[in-house]
Length: 329
Image 1 (cartoon, one colour):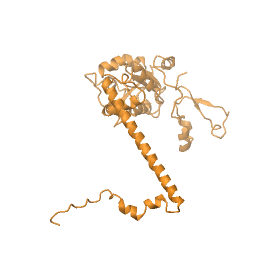
Image 2 (cartoon, one colour):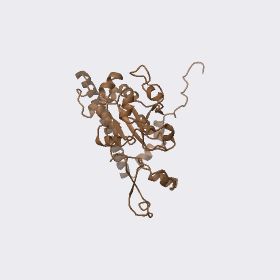
Image 3 (spheres, helix red, strand yellow):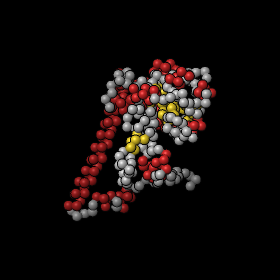
Image 4 (spheres, one colour):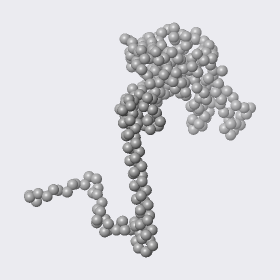
């Protein structure tokens, strides 16, 4: 059975009330209650009953589950934007989004969330296409993650219903028909990396394009830049965690230098910890000695006016510095 075709919904008996048959019933809504049920609930109860998760990973496009779903779609029934926006689509609306999705991050997830909810009144079946390594490296450059790793990251995003592997760089009529795509979701800015023209110009001209919004402040390039900027920190961290210099592609000299720096930091930390323990132990011994003779406690002595006079506290931050002596004063 297709992944999003049947979801379990609680009856009123499960919520502590009564129902006609007391059984769990099925609904074709993908992770939400249907509109009629939602209308009968108060806002708080409706929010509680809305499930924003899936129980399994989305299938890859060659898997039986994806094939069964695709075969069940009558693509002769064409869906317009007006139908999808008004909730009048006679079947699920098949929306396609694509990308590279290297170092999968919240910006990618937000794109998929927007695509999944692009038609709030209709049930959207979200397909996410991802290019393989050969195509990506030739068009955009080397990725951190392999294509298999990127597919796996995408299929575990809760908004995704299917992952289309080996996705093309530029969409054409054959690809749309093969995957029975109704609409393509992407941000509106022309995308011409690896192409002289906007790769989405074709679907825009056909009226099959729906716009999502980019998430500012996060991108795969930004994440890579952070790693490069703090290269030494991450190399030393991984060496300390057991990676060899060969794992990190380090020369013998560099590997020894980083190991020495880690050892120095370890010794510093150990010495600092020992000094703090020694200070605490000394205070305890002095306090015990003073208490034997009934004198003042160590804390009282340290807070006395004599000690404060000998060791004055530093001036508060921002205080003016004392003026230097000169012949004019």
